[in-house]
Length: 270
Ligand code: 13P
Ligand code: ZN
Image (cartoon, rainbow, N blue to C red; front, side):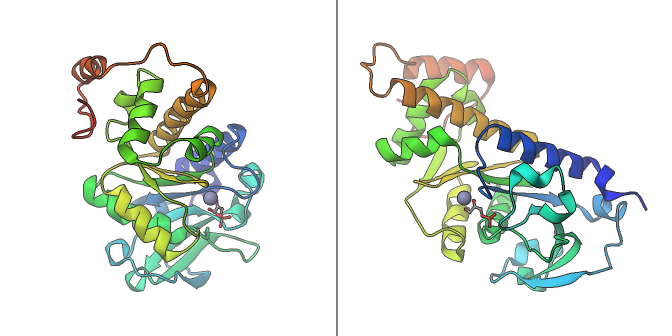
């Protein structure tokens, strides 16, 4: 049996958490990541039958029954993941229709998965229906996107169009746009259900005055989506108080669609 600390998925998870912290998106215990793994990937590195603990999830997710997830722990600091992955991360298998999670590795201090586990698992279920290759859900608190939710309308079309107009490549990276939830109590099944509903039509979901969710086929894609949207929000926050002289027109957006073979969200361009 190989050492799980040498597994490419674990190394990539540690690097991603470290990088997110370095970007300033994950102060203290802010943010959480879940990465879906196959049994084949997992069993190379550990006994998938040896259950350390069974942890109730507080929700059901029948579509994810039997699935494996590497996930960050609640209250854990992204800054520390690289120094103690076995404390700050856990590998779980969902059972009993997703109502329980078997801990197979990690959370060695007695900890458990993120308090945002409902939003993560419900978002995985939603994204898998759109794209069966989806593997990652990522949540963080990027400064400029968060700032933007205080000064910009939360209308999804307007929010998306503003971000698209801030950098030429935004529409190429997230042609599906960003969906937006109003402020809601975090860590609940309710915000989980609302996030998953929004994940049906976009891979980015803003939580107003809180942060952002991104989903992708791998850690790079989810990270890249967040990085691009956050860059656009940074530019918005630099220019929002200044007279706007130029922008990217809808006509130019259509040229980008053609050049990069993407299709902007229906009805979002004139
Ligand atoms: P956790 O420490 O439970 O992962 O929560 C962090 C967070 O960002 C809550 O939204
Ligand atoms: Zn958060």
